[in-house]
View 1 (cartoon, rainbow, N blue to C red):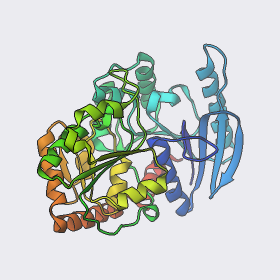
View 2: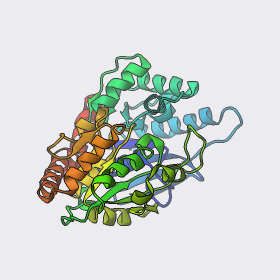
View 3: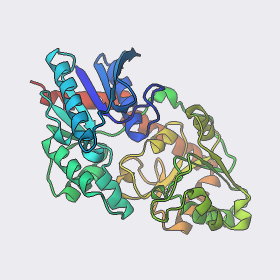
Length: 378
């Protein structure tokens, strides 16, 4: 099968930085190539047009057309022609696009078009209690209605998306995946270290982290908190630094055991995971977070938010612990229950990796995706 992915981002030196959408496509692409399928990546928003190949994948860097007032329209028409030419020349069988901002809303490809729900702007604005731009919501809804098929990375995301757009589009749940080769099980560490890795931003519960850690420290003076990730501005207050907003929320004594190490390369993040006893993710807004999967793959116990998508990754009290981010004392008690119980650390870590192997490896998810794509091929 020949699959094209239309995306605004992909983690490659030539295509620029990438977030969750690009990372999920990257992992899925490797799984598809390993199964013998052909993958084409169409990355728009680039500085120049370019075609190159690497690791069995063909890349099309697509430069946006800039004409005041009609740039998006002309760029979409350019991409539509490229997709249709590739389909006509039997270079692709199907194209997949993300739901974010509904870029595919006005595309009319001659091949089947599938949309994967990783969380639209409408979806995240709803979870953040923020207003969504009318244009984004309109385009996202139109894109979904015009798609031949819908994949959602979690049932929660699919159900909520249908509700928000007042549609009843059928979808298939296929989760995000990771390359287990890059996230091998690590040696057990019992050093009272709590790790959060990811962007420092309100929607991921970072303003709750100090209040949770204060409660942890109250009962465990040896507990240490490490925060690894890019600092971000706050959309609600307008503050340029979430970290600066966090600092005064820590108790003075507890803050002495806190370290913010900033944004790190992927290899360094993995070292931080290896050296941690427990990873924490008190987030309010996700679709299906890859960071949770990465920590679990490295055999680390996780204490995470119990909102929506969470029980589609973690079975509470078996391969992780779940709690609401606003319940600071209860969240802290669950962290301490792991820090003070070495047997539980080991048991929960083993069960976590087992879950990831069975459900979230790139090979498993690639096979599920191919089976879904085949439904739409003539």
